[in-house]
Length: 172
Image (cartoon, rainbow, N blue to C red):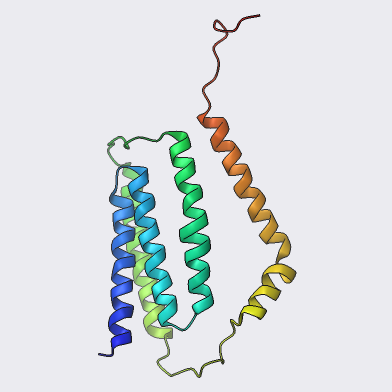
């Protein structure tokens, strides 16, 4: 086994472990920290695949800015420990078989369609100039709409977190 393959598998294991921990945590802040670990491990995998720009964007934008936004909203909502509830019967009866079928389907597609031939450096698209052209010219409208949706989500979290004033407490 080569060193790159060992690192790739290690980062993949950290990603899967962090994702499982994200779902298993009962406190939202711990889940957010697990998500940061997943994003950092994915950035490591991107580095090993030769996608340095994507790795940098993964760390700066997702593990940095978006996670700060998530933690800000979690703290603004003052979310405590999640209540323990019994699972829904429909979720168990539909979700578990659906998850198994989806997992088998993804594994089948990956094993069937994954090529093992080497790709020369520069043969794949992904130069930063090309990405910038796509992001800030061809897909400018979806990029801006996404930023507006994030702003609306923050404003919604602020409105939901604010305590309504009681009518009896107002002084006229």
